[in-house]
Length: 344
Image (cartoon, rainbow, N blue to C red):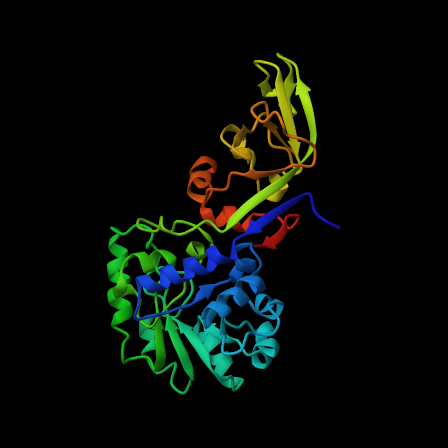
């Protein structure tokens, strides 16, 4: 059964963004973060498209996400960023993915179970996940088969923040002191800070999917276009109200289009004042409140609009982020499961 709302996903744009990010750090391999179901786009579909383009390093958050990917493409490696809880050990020992060990307990758990190749996260100032630099160089990691030692930048989207340079220096100081084949520090925003942050491997996320991660990142191409179908066209006489709370009244006779999308799908109530759709060349502003499942647009400027037409919803990530007060990450991952995801 077809859905009355869909996401048109541009596979060529996804690959172009990955290549553009990789070109910013030419001496590093460019991986891809596909956690949170590929930032809402579909992790397996993203993985296979990027793997076909040459990406070899992928990152998810949990073992459940790793299992949902199914078989990995040949030559691809997968890392699980949240490491291994005791509850994960059965899956982790049997799965080809590597855990990113984040705590002393995780290191000991993996070693005592005879675990194989792994990655290690070292905290350099974010105070989120990771062992300390002192723990990393204390002998704690001796005997582990460490593929990649990672850290994570806290403020990379602000190029002038002093913590960036401190984290870079602290991470660089681990060279030769942790027995890992590769080093990885930069996310999307970190890539934009310059080649010094590239080390051996970068792991972009938001910018792959069309998000602007920081100054200089405006060259990425949008990947996601939400589309919703018109359920009904109706005429609203001058002076009559539209939607819950009667917050909008027609100042003139208005042709209204009712769309099958709402805040349950990620089109937020905060966008009621500034959101719009496009039908051909016509812009259709939102009128009235955004409902859970329905949205009303002023289609007076689109006289040929008909029931069953598909309307493209505005989803310029930086603009919608500013209008809604939500981050670009929240906007992407908040796109609901009722959208049919279609790659083109």
